[in-house]
Amino acid sequence: MTQQPANYLYELIEVPKTTGVCFYTKKDTGSYVPNHWHDAIEIIYMLQGSVDITVESSAYHLQEGQCFLIHSSVIHSTKCTSRNTGIVFQIPLDFIRLYLPNVEQLQFILSDPSDNPIRQTKLDLFKKTLTQMQIIDELRPEGYILRFNSLLFEILFQLYHHFSVKIFQTNLTHKTKDLNRLHLVLDYTNQNYNRPISIDEISQIAYLDSRYFCRFFKKHMGLTFLEYLNEVRLSHIYQDLISTQDTLQYILERHGFTNYKVFRRVFSEHFHATPSQIRKQLIKNE
Image 1 (cartoon, rainbow, N blue to C red):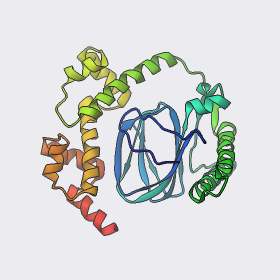
Image 2: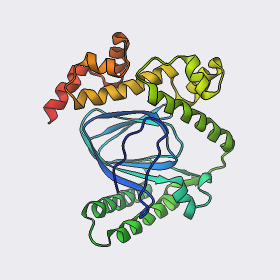
Image 3: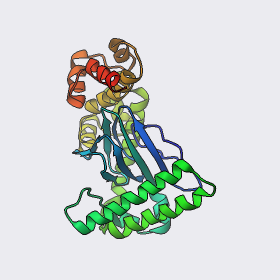
Image 4: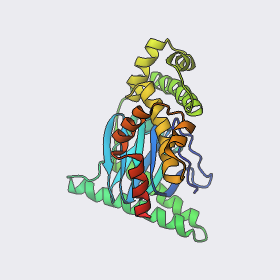
């Protein structure tokens, strides 16, 4: 199982044929991934440190020992400002559909911790199974795929019986159409983020009137297009900030953030520190 690179839009998840899922242990020194989504259930199990997750404008702080589930086609972002280690487990919906044909009628809910002792016991078993998957994935003894896949199906069984509820989804076709439109917009933004992108220009990519596009984007993404464009730039700037010794001015120019005053405000809102403080903290933790 190979680690997937971070994508900042609709995320295409590549999986090995031997398992059909993406499973890896991620050691993160710092990252910020703006709003994106994928056709997979994503499970994050924090082993060390913490991470901030935003799901459709709701913020969560995932701490060590906690598990979190993000449903398929749900817009979300992640932010890590200090070192952490976690299990990332992505199960494509097409894979689940092979064994649960009614998966579109299921909502998976994984609230950790739980006040219900019985539900907490089920959560502990779920996390124990994830840990067993991690161990077999790291050691990889002869025939390890057999053991990994047996644990994979155990996880699916637990998800179905312990952490799912049946729902009746309406307007599913309309939602898919909206996500496909957003895919075009976010993909174009990711390819051109380091230059100015006007509302008229991006509206044409979405095949929408500019006034309607602004309402459409804010409704689905929870922020304006300009705010999202700045967040994409910020994610690249943050990565360069912690992984290179380039000057801040050079980094800003490289990623198209020309308004320094706006940058400082946005950076402070996201990371509650200045760029120099982030760099000093990284050196201190090495």
